[in-house]
Image (cartoon, rainbow, N blue to C red; front, side):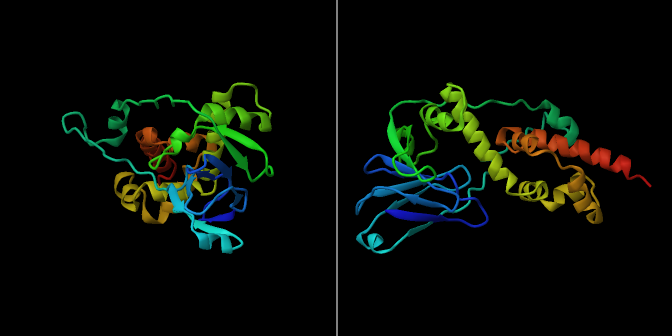
Length: 248
């Protein structure tokens, strides 16, 4: 079966398409196109970091079209809950952010193998990964196994876990680079945050975002959910420096 993934304003390359019914999968190419073995009533599972995961049950009618079109929605990451303790916070952003601790991510469990055909490298090219991570509420790849094969293509040394993490991080960086620094800040914080909290004048709003811009690699770290408060602290410092440089 041939298909194409469609999405608004986002890259549709390297999206995983997994046939839950037969334990085979594919990866979309630059245009979002993929090819996968499937039969009527098989369930396809679509997954990528920047999109909301989606399941699709194949019907007889789907085989009458040249290309099955699947639309994915952009995944907007939000914090589930923010707890503010009045006894420990002063209301001063610059001081309060220094008191917050960071926590790392837990390691990923790695188990069974299945085979993937990658649309970018032609039929027959396979990647190994785990079907356990593609349950109806699936959330992640088997990084160790998929990284080993991808690492061979990209010429990485034989360290599958490290290679997989590198590939995933490069994909995330690519997704971040699709938008400008200003667009990321506008999505993450309200206009009122810049005007009221950072004391940026309305006429200086665009100029300040250009002033605070940082390299993509650095921005990728700040945009991680666990570094939300560090990003606020960075903007507070940049706002202070911006005001100092623009004193009349």
